[in-house]
Amino acid sequence: MQEERGVFVHHGSMNLNIVSWNVRGLNCGKKRCMLRNMLRIWKADVVCFQETKLEREIANIVKEIWGSRWADYVQLEASGTRGGILIMWDKRIWEGEDLKWHLTGVYAQNDRVEREETWLEVGAARGLFTCPWVLCGDFNTVRYPCEKFNCSRISRSMTDLSEFIEDMELMDLDLVGGEFTRRKGERHSTAARLDRFMISEDWDTKFRNIKQSILQRIVSDHSPLMLQCEEWGSTKSYFKFENWWLTTENFNDKSKGMVGVFSFPGKTRFYTGSKAEGIERKLKEWSKTSLGNLKQQKQLVLNQLAEIERIQDQRILEEGEIVSRLALTTKLEEIVKNEETAWR
Image 1: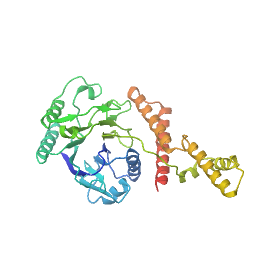
Image 2: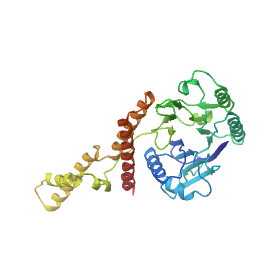
Image 3: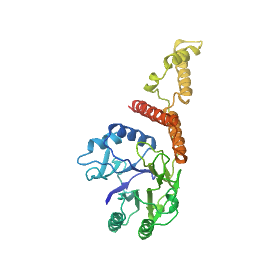
Image 4: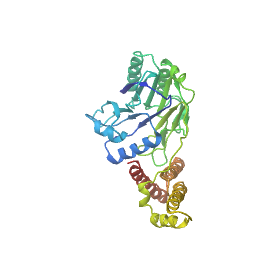
């Protein structure tokens, strides 16, 4: 029975990205590096990790994962190697008087009686506040038969979860981007939607746009989920020379070729400035290709991993596909390292 709560007062823009993820442990440094990278890409404002398997003081681990000294957190320690919940956020953002709300993270046990105790504990906590509420985590059960692979009957555990949701007057959001949040086995013979976000009705009235989506599964047999609230759009980007480009094969030859392309008549000052602008323009063009754009490279690798996962849903992977998955995972780690270099 595990549940942790955070209280937030949001100041400024009403745009929120909340990530919930059963990470299956945070003791591995390589895994923490991967998580830090993905959180930056997802632009998460608040993160709730379940099954952290962490005990005692974790301030340095939180700083490492969040990537800055401005991280704040609350933690429910693991019991030995079981459980653990960690909620993190940037404390610079959550100041002001605009919107006060509560977040509850849940990691339910794989036992119906213990889950019932969790539902009672969450219900008791809900009685302590009246502001908008988000509930997220690994509930270790599904709500409907369609949320579990090869399941055709309604179990008592499903009924228990539905009754809990109704008693708490929560909205159980649709999941965009996939059916199952946890997969296991050679052919993903065990697959279910164990993880979810739920919101109170007054949360729903605070935002024009609310979407729960499934993100690419990595470093865990659970997929991360994101709750996006209000508007999400693109921002103007500016040119920046990336240090990792220097490690790209044949980049030096390519850049020399760019220098040689431009020839301008006139004064030296004009010549130098125009040539620099021309080189910058060429580098911008090159940066939009897959070789010069880490975001494109990573998305391509993640898409390929997702395709292998879809194949595994249908059948056992062949030896060549297993090798490809291993190579893609290694490639993803290399891209993450390059992104870490780019962000310094």
